[in-house]
Every structure is written in structure tokens, then in C-alpha cells.
Image 1 (cartoon, rainbow, N blue to C red):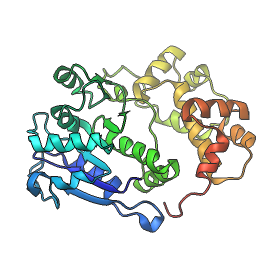
Image 2 (image 1 turned 180 degrees about the horizontal axis):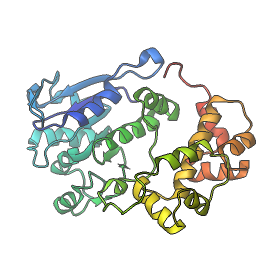
Image 3 (image 1 turned 90 degrees about the vertical axis):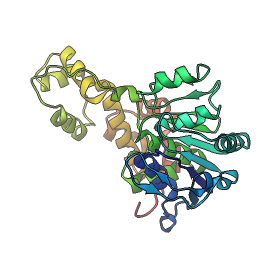
Image 4 (image 1 turned 180 degrees about the vertical axis):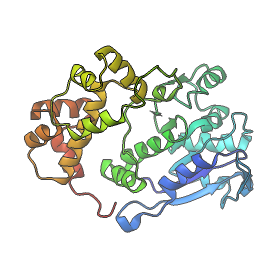
Length: 319
């Protein structure tokens, strides 16, 4: 059971990525019935460290804290961070005894320096994947995903993808209800579809409309109605081909995939908050029949609507 969390910091640590680990695991949410962790920030010799933006963090623990941690968090640091031998050894012992280890963004380079990526699937910010692959050719670097789990080692892409990775660990340890409740408290989606490739800078397409936001709002308000690319393109006064291209440029996905995700999210809310039969949920969410709803739940959520309702019907009050 996940109870003891230690976050390793060294000079050059990035405040936001450190904050991700502090927010997910260091915030006391026990009043809402959520887990409370024995949380600590540590550094070699408990020395103060200078962050990437200049202020100083004063850890409360030294490396001894890593020896008992159920989870070791490593926020982003400089790509050329100096990893002392005692840090590398402590991380190897954590992995050997089966502790969770999670890195955020460039924090993975600490694992690389400790020799812990050989033969493992992993990821990092898309800007750094080539450098990581060059430093560790035996690592299986996936440049497209938000996070990767290999055993109990979880690596994540840039910045906010660390939140996705942390919620993934919560789901693995406590189940989806707890992970979703924490996500609600943080006012973020409990699960983001897609990968980081959609965030790589792409050329801006010429467009005679500033944004698809009005159309997206209309689609959300009419999810139960049938929609085709041809119909949506006509509403947007473009050809289907131009519409599909602009839709992907703005949302990072296809109209069909985006619409399916919105309908799934509506179905999830209806399963959580109403007593409607699955057939009625399917109709209200725009899937038409319970069979189609079950198909998409199985494909995208790896579960059934009935199982989802059993897991999430009782939500945590006030979350």
C-alpha cells in the first residue's frame, strides 16, 4: 500500500514540476476521505538547493528518507545535473526493493545517470527525447506518450504530464474512484487521451475563421444528436477536407475521436450522477444503443458501463 512518499531535489530543480509532486502527494485531503501520505522532500545531506528560477528550497530530510519510501519522486532538473554516487545508489536500491519511482519531464536524466533505463520503456519531454536516446541507446524511448510505466518505474513527458503520471499511480494503488476524486479537487481531467505529439509546435494553417470554439461548444450542447463531418463542415462553412484539417490543427485529433471522447465523458457523468438505465445513458450521450456504448467503453476505458457505475456511483462529497 502506498503510504510513504519522498521527493528528491538537487540544484536546478524546477519549481512547477516539484509542485506537481507536492500537490498530488503532499496535500492533506483526509477530511474528504482521501489518502494522506507521509510526505517529505529530501536532498543529499539535507542541503538547501537552488531552483531553476533562483530561489532556494530547504529540504527536511536527507537521502536516508529514500530507503523507506514507497514512492520516490524526481522532478525536472537540468539535463546536466550532477548525480552523486550516493544518490544513484539510493535510487537503484529503491528500484530493487520494488518502490514506485516517478520522474517528471527532465527528471528522467537522473535515472539515466543512475543506470536505471537500460532496456526499459520510458519517455520525457519531446524536446529531450533525442538527447535521452543518444545518452542511453538501450532505452526504449517513446516520444509520443504522456507517461510510460515499466514495472514500477513511471516516467512522464513535460510539466503537466507529471500530473497524469501521478494520477496513474493513484489509480494503480487506490483505484479509479480515489484518482478521480483527487483530480476533481485539483480541477483537472482524471485522464487525458492522446499523447504529447499533439503539443509539438506545428505550422499555423491559413484560416478564414479565428477558432473552432463556437462549433465545439455547439457540439457539446448537442451530443445526443447524430453528427457527420459533412454536416459539421457545412455548419463551419468549409469543405469536409478543409474542416478535418483545421479541426486536427486546433484540437490535435479528428472530429470523430473528439466527439467520441466528449460523449464518453458525458456518459461517465450520467453513470456517476443518475440512476438512468444504461440504454438511456447511451441515448442521452449520443451513442444510440447500449451495445455501442459498451463497445466504446471497452475500447477506450477497458471496462463496461456497469462496472464503471459500480466503481464511481458513490463519489466523495465536496470533491
